[in-house]
Length: 286
Image (cartoon, rainbow, N blue to C red):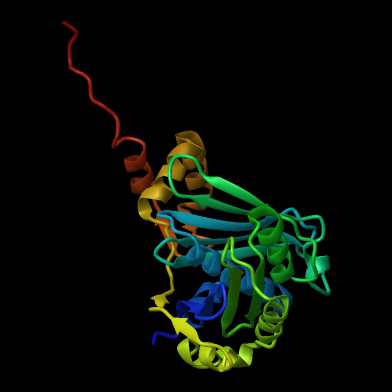
């Protein structure tokens, strides 16, 4: 089984469905070009796991964007996941501002999940009203989506993991069973995801239950930046601004904040950008 995967499963005797996500290689690639402190790394990891779990729980063709914005320390956090489980993410922080925990890190921040699967994207607002992102998402599922859920998220600079349990709509469950499942998922730690995590971890975690595990799907880091997108941005910047930057720096360098890809543009490139779409008129007017 691939180390980086999302694995759906269901309980034979309980009206509960679940998803487990495990990312190691793709997570380390996401961190490669950044230098976050431990708290920001953990928060971005939790958001990454949560985005993958949400993406797997939905049937859609497009992308999901999870975003936290507006905190004093954590200025912005963005994770994007496609329906093919291709993920990228980053966080930006205010230099010189410190935070001791998740609540302080995200104080006064706004959090949203946007599903873009066609002409009209859907956005759900996640209230950050708990001591963790997992607690905030549980409240979101209960209040906004009206699906009782248990969420557990773990992360360090080596591995990301998480699990999402949701009650099947319209079917009741014994409260004792629901509390028992919550207790089990809250025992998860990064140590449980140190190796291959999938069918074996699900079986170990829910050893007292009959669980049906479905085919895992690979999760990969992939950035959607491209030469074409960067050139479109430079054109939007305008010819005057592009030529001014070129004159000041003897070249333009554009660095993707997600993947660290560096693209260089010299005088010839800038000339091409602003002349290749020009339509040449006739030499004379009839």
